[in-house]
Image (cartoon, rainbow, N blue to C red; front, side, top):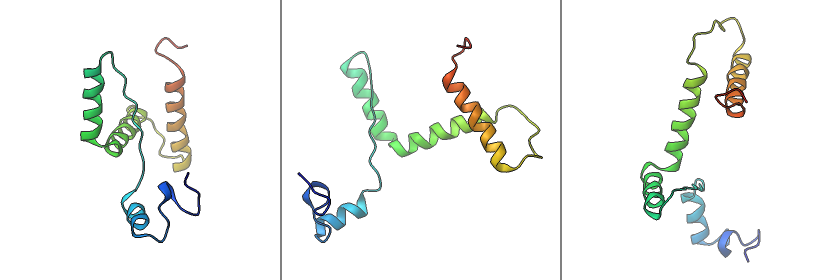
Length: 102
Protein backbone atom coordinates (compact mmCIF):
# COMPACT_ATOMS: atom_id res chain seq x y z
CA UNK A 1 0.00 0.00 0.00
CA UNK A 2 1.36 3.43 -0.93
CA UNK A 3 1.92 5.82 1.92
CA UNK A 4 1.95 9.62 1.56
CA UNK A 5 5.72 9.66 2.10
CA UNK A 6 6.33 7.17 -0.72
CA UNK A 7 3.85 8.67 -3.19
CA UNK A 8 1.32 7.12 -5.52
CA UNK A 9 1.99 3.49 -6.47
CA UNK A 10 5.03 3.43 -4.23
CA UNK A 11 7.06 5.81 -6.41
CA UNK A 12 9.04 8.04 -4.11
CA UNK A 13 9.12 11.77 -4.68
CA UNK A 14 12.84 11.72 -5.38
CA UNK A 15 12.84 8.87 -7.89
CA UNK A 16 13.00 9.60 -11.61
CA UNK A 17 9.76 7.66 -12.15
CA UNK A 18 7.96 9.69 -9.47
CA UNK A 19 9.08 12.99 -11.03
CA UNK A 20 8.05 11.83 -14.51
CA UNK A 21 4.56 10.92 -13.35
CA UNK A 22 4.05 14.29 -11.66
CA UNK A 23 5.09 16.10 -14.87
CA UNK A 24 2.86 14.03 -17.13
CA UNK A 25 -0.20 13.61 -14.93
CA UNK A 26 -2.24 16.80 -15.18
CA UNK A 27 -5.48 15.29 -14.02
CA UNK A 28 -7.41 12.08 -13.78
CA UNK A 29 -10.82 11.64 -15.35
CA UNK A 30 -13.34 8.88 -14.88
CA UNK A 31 -15.95 8.54 -17.60
CA UNK A 32 -18.87 6.25 -16.85
CA UNK A 33 -20.47 5.08 -20.05
CA UNK A 34 -23.71 3.13 -20.08
CA UNK A 35 -25.37 1.33 -22.94
CA UNK A 36 -27.81 -1.43 -23.70
CA UNK A 37 -25.13 -3.63 -25.27
CA UNK A 38 -21.42 -4.21 -25.12
CA UNK A 39 -21.02 -2.67 -28.58
CA UNK A 40 -22.82 0.51 -27.47
CA UNK A 41 -20.57 0.87 -24.43
CA UNK A 42 -17.50 0.14 -26.54
CA UNK A 43 -18.53 2.86 -29.00
CA UNK A 44 -19.13 5.42 -26.24
CA UNK A 45 -15.80 4.58 -24.67
CA UNK A 46 -14.06 5.09 -28.02
CA UNK A 47 -15.85 8.44 -28.43
CA UNK A 48 -14.67 9.67 -25.01
CA UNK A 49 -11.14 8.44 -25.66
CA UNK A 50 -11.04 10.11 -29.09
CA UNK A 51 -12.49 13.46 -28.00
CA UNK A 52 -10.62 13.53 -24.65
CA UNK A 53 -12.47 14.15 -21.37
CA UNK A 54 -11.18 17.71 -20.97
CA UNK A 55 -12.55 18.69 -24.40
CA UNK A 56 -15.93 17.16 -23.53
CA UNK A 57 -16.01 19.10 -20.25
CA UNK A 58 -15.22 22.36 -22.09
CA UNK A 59 -17.94 21.61 -24.63
CA UNK A 60 -20.48 20.93 -21.87
CA UNK A 61 -19.55 24.12 -19.99
CA UNK A 62 -19.85 26.16 -23.19
CA UNK A 63 -23.25 24.62 -23.94
CA UNK A 64 -24.69 25.53 -20.54
CA UNK A 65 -23.11 28.99 -20.59
CA UNK A 66 -24.79 29.69 -23.95
CA UNK A 67 -28.04 28.18 -22.66
CA UNK A 68 -28.06 30.57 -19.69
CA UNK A 69 -27.43 33.55 -22.01
CA UNK A 70 -29.79 32.54 -24.82
CA UNK A 71 -32.37 35.23 -24.07
CA UNK A 72 -31.60 38.91 -24.20
CA UNK A 73 -31.84 40.42 -20.75
CA UNK A 74 -31.00 43.97 -19.80
CA UNK A 75 -28.45 43.18 -17.10
CA UNK A 76 -25.89 45.80 -18.10
CA UNK A 77 -26.49 47.88 -14.99
CA UNK A 78 -25.76 45.00 -12.64
CA UNK A 79 -22.24 44.17 -11.43
CA UNK A 80 -20.61 41.15 -13.07
CA UNK A 81 -20.80 38.96 -9.92
CA UNK A 82 -24.57 39.51 -9.75
CA UNK A 83 -25.00 38.61 -13.43
CA UNK A 84 -22.93 35.46 -12.86
CA UNK A 85 -25.06 34.54 -9.85
CA UNK A 86 -28.21 35.04 -11.93
CA UNK A 87 -26.89 32.74 -14.68
CA UNK A 88 -25.85 30.14 -12.13
CA UNK A 89 -29.29 30.23 -10.51
CA UNK A 90 -30.88 29.58 -13.93
CA UNK A 91 -28.64 26.56 -14.30
CA UNK A 92 -29.59 25.25 -10.84
CA UNK A 93 -33.28 25.70 -11.64
CA UNK A 94 -32.88 23.86 -14.93
CA UNK A 95 -31.12 20.92 -13.32
CA UNK A 96 -33.63 20.62 -10.47
CA UNK A 97 -36.90 21.10 -12.39
CA UNK A 98 -37.93 18.89 -15.30
CA UNK A 99 -39.84 20.02 -18.40
CA UNK A 100 -43.20 19.53 -16.65
CA UNK A 101 -42.24 21.90 -13.82
CA UNK A 102 -41.71 19.23 -11.16
